[in-house]
Image (tube, rainbow, N blue to C red; front, side, top):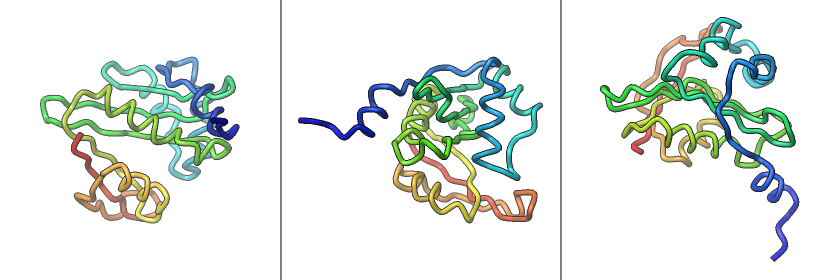
Length: 156
């Protein structure tokens, strides 16, 4: 059976590996392109790439960062937090976000995973619901512009 070329690119050429401080510039660009006004400041990006205990994974496709996820496990509390997840707009709809999410969930080693998402980010909410995340709370005026955040949780 012959696979479509986009499928071959996604499966064969993408790898998910640990990100590090050398990825700072690419991560800054990805944050700006993905989150615009909500992009993390430089200090937070350096922290996520260097702090101990943080899971930091990047998807590499055609030699460049196509996506990033960071997870913060809290094993004593029985849950982990997906702190950020982003896919470069040029590489979306190829399963990269789902692959990053699954990899991070597996590495956190906790029974539950939590995350926040903008209430207006319907595409991301649909992805998380497809991945069995359920809404557990709303944080009012969480974002700088006053928009609410939806808190979601998944039993792993």
